[in-house]
Length: 299
Ligand SMILES: Cc1cc2nc3c(=O)[nH]c(=O)nc-3n(C[C@H](O)[C@H](O)[C@H](O)COP(=O)(O)OP(=O)(O)OC[C@H]3O[C@@H](n4cnc5c(N)ncnc54)[C@H](O)[C@@H]3O)c2cc1C
Image (cartoon, rainbow, N blue to C red; front, top):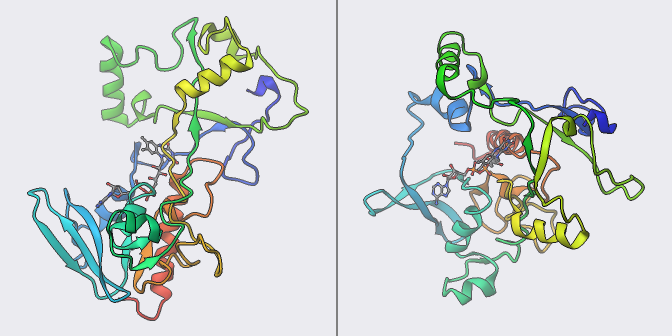
C-alpha cells in the first residue's frame, strides 16, 4: 500500500488513523487477551464477584420503573432471579442487549405490543440503528509461499510449537491479521487504481472478483453476493442528548426512564467508529465503571 502512495502509520490509534501499518493487539503473555482474561480472571478470589457460566439472561426484573435484578435460565433450563441492590449493568452486546430490554418492556411500544409484551417504557430507538462494518473479500492466489503458508504442518509445526512453548515467540503468537491500512476511497478526485505494486508482485492471479469482468455491475453483484459482517455490531441502544427521541441511554449509559439500569457495551455508541471496535468496547467499560463509582448510590 505504501507503493500506492499511502503513508506509513506507526500508530493507527495516534494522531491520525490514515495510512498503512501494523495492528495493535490486546495481548498478554504472547496470547490474545479477552476482557474476561484481563478483568475477571484476576478477581476470581474476590468475594464480591460471582460468575455464573452457561446461563442466559432473559429479562430485567423491574419494580415499577426501577431495575432490581435479572431473570436468567441455567443450563438445565431452570429459571432464577438474581437480585441487585444497586445498578443492573446490561452488557450482552449490540445484538442481544436491545432484545433483553425489549423482553423487559423497554423499547419501541408498537413493536412490543405486536409481540404482546407489556410496555414499561416507550423508547423508539431500542433495537434500531444497528450498524456494522461490512466486509467484501478480494481473494488472490499468491505466486509463492509467503506469510504463514505451511507453518502449521510437518516439521514446521513442531518447530513453531516448540518456539511458542519454550520462548513464547514465533508464528503461533500471531492473531492472523498482522497489518492493514485505513484509506479514504471516497475522494472523488483520486484516480482509480487497478494494478498496484508491491502486492501485485506477489500475486499469481486474482480469484475474486473475477478479473474477466470488473464492470460496475459485476462488482456490485460481487459485493451483494459476498458482503458479510466484520463482527462489529454497534449502536442498537444508543446514547443521545436529552430531547433526542431515538436516544435509549443518557450520556452516563443509563437507560432513559428506568432507574438503576445501565447498558455497557457497543450498543451504546451513537455511531460506529471508523476502526476496529474492541478497544472502544473496553473504553465503554472503563467509563461505565467511572460513572458508577462517581454516583451517589455506588454499592
Ligand atoms: C470473530 C470476531 C473477531 C473480532 N476481531 C476483532 C479484532 O481483531 N479487533 C477488534 O477491535 N474487534 C474485533 N472484534 C469485535 C469485538 O470483539 C467487539 O466489538 C467487542 O467484543 C464488542 O463488545 P461488547 O461488550 O459490545 O459485546 P461482546 O463482546 O459480544 O459481549 C457480549 C457478551 O454477552 C454475552 N451474552 C449475550 N447474550 C447473553 C444473555 N442473554 N445472557 C447472558 N450473557 C449474554 C455474550 O456471550 C458475550 O460474552 C471481533 C469480533 C468477533 C466476533
